[in-house]
Structures are given as structure tokens and as C-alpha cells.
Length: 179
Image 1: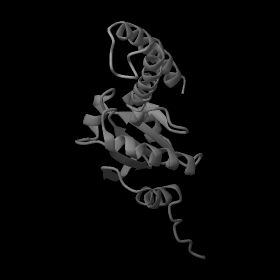
Image 2: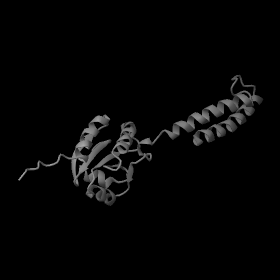
Image 3: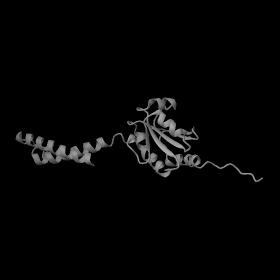
């Protein structure tokens, strides 16, 4: 929101200056031939541009309860832990990754305390992308007991992830025999 307000303010000032300049030349556009029209037009354009720039890169934006992985050692430690780990491999310029981000956030919220949900930017940690043979993003891996148990390539519906997460979080208990 602050970015939009700043963009609008800058646009207002630039638009007013352009309106003043074009007013002296006898412009015919009602929005830019006077300082007030130019200021209004500039404020709207500046706010719109500032808002659109803020929309890029949402795939990597910090999500509630989702940990961003910055190194291979960090992911190795999480995978070795007893809890299941859902890993979203993504790239900032991937539109499908942006679409998947709310699903990943919802899964993190749903399994909070029972599983870890993390994101790995393949551009920032290429050694992990290579190690896990990530050939396209988004790719989501589920680890349980230190091993990969499921892989999804491309954005999927939340139900597909939930079914596997439920199985990993509460594995079936072994049968008990009465002696």
C-alpha cells in the first residue's frame, strides 16, 4: 500500500509539471494541457505502475509458516528431522509458482506443528535443484523419515498434497498381536 501511495505522489508531481509545461504550448488533451489534469493523470498512472511492480515475485515472497531455505545444509537438517517436510522448488519468474504459493501457505498453516513446509528458490540454491533433479518448476517434494516419498511436477490442487501429507504425518500403526 505504501508503494502505491508513493507512486501516486511521484506521479502527481510529474503530472503537474508536464501539465504546466504543455499548458504553455497549448495542448489539446484535457488531462495534460493543465497542471491539475496532469497531476490527476500522473497520480493515477504512478499508483497503477507502483501496484503492478509490487505484484512481481510473489512466488518467493515470505509466506506465513513457510520457511525459505538458503543452503543445502539447512534443507539437509530439516529432512533429517523426524517430522515430514514438504519442499516447494520454485523460481521468481514462474507464473505457476506464483499460483501455487497460496496453496503452499495453506498447507503450512494446516500442518503447523506436525510437518514442515519450506520453499527453495532454484536460482539461489542451484545445488539443491541439481541434487534432487529438478527439471522444471514448480516441483514439490515430500520427505518422510529422511527419504523422498512423493514428487509433484507442476501446480496441483491442495487435495493432492493433503492426501500424501496426511499419510506422512500419521503413518499407519503396525498391527499389534496379543500374546
